[in-house]
Image (cartoon, rainbow, N blue to C red; front, side, top):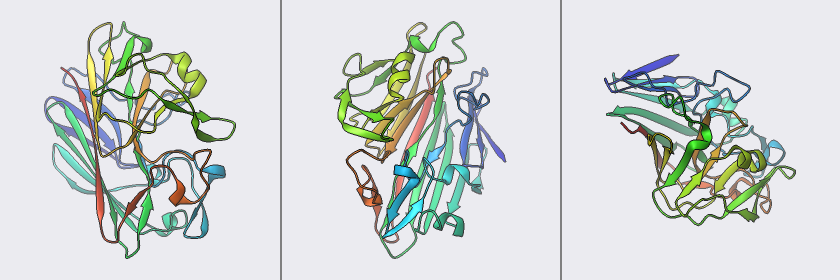
Length: 297
């Protein structure tokens, strides 16, 4: 089921399956989110990643002494969410553990995802609640695919764009070892043009798949079209990591992915508590993560 929010400046469409943002358009009809229509690139738009981010070794993880199978990025992106509240400018989706989810992840949880349109900004507040009397372990990530080039920049190309951080970054990025199926924290490279910028190049993604910052200083990045000067800002709160991904040459989007937790690392064992960036919630407590996307006028 699609839910449409509109405030006269922006219109957002969110599907209740995965509570996934499918469209973000301005009043002139310019679209900023990849719609997933061409599966040869990617058939998703902006999924949320819970209770794990990235892949597990052999698709399995050890939790509380038991083995569980879980697909890459967890399962909440592949579940139907409930619309708990709705106004013309906002919608609240909720998701609660089920017998099916407990077979893959043995914790009781309640998730809330509030979308709010304010001016030209779409804000997403994602709340994870532990509803049991035991500590809960989880990872969480976001994965919005931003159209690059923007649809109002038809003469620009993907490689006309730069990612601009709002603070200096170390420029030491761990490499995902495709053969091992894990992130190698000891094998690093620098993909930054300056301490605050990355110039987008397809050949880099062809070699390394994903540019990963396992520790990020910034809490906002701007995608800038260097040909036209047009910009879009992504702001994220309470995330320690960020990654950038596009699937292959010609893909007209860049995924900007703030994470808390990541794929299995080469030096970690298969226990969930060993995952880099794993989060812990005490009994009957919660945590909120916020993501904002704002196309600049």
